[in-house]
Length: 172
Image (cartoon, rainbow, N blue to C red):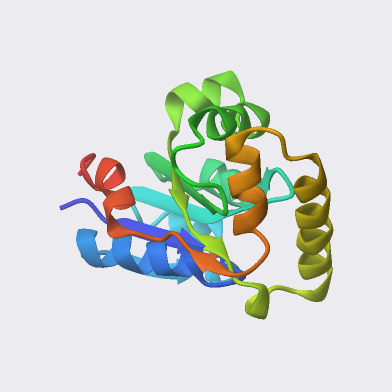
């Protein structure tokens, strides 16, 4: 039987929520990224890493990628949560291109899972950055999608849904 570990890095709770749902669906282990090492990962066949999209980057990806490369893990999957709705496919695809090499995009199964924004759990710098971005976007918004996004990010919201797990779960 395949041993699977879901590793997560969560700041406001959305990634943790998805990580728990995945671990529950696959009946596997769950660990905070702070608790893992290459040695611990080597005890698993598959590692699924989840984190947030933060300032255009995958928070903690380089560290976990390096740990996986130093371990005996044979399969690595990635999911990222963010404030962008799943329907923003072009933006999500551009995000993957900015964060994963062409080789990684081919070899690492990767999934975007909309989370949302939780201003109440954000660090002060993140909260200030998002409020400034919201104000700027509101002034520059021209398309219907930009106007919708500007309105969404004015406050906290949650787009999380178990349906976004389906493509990942289908691989098992």
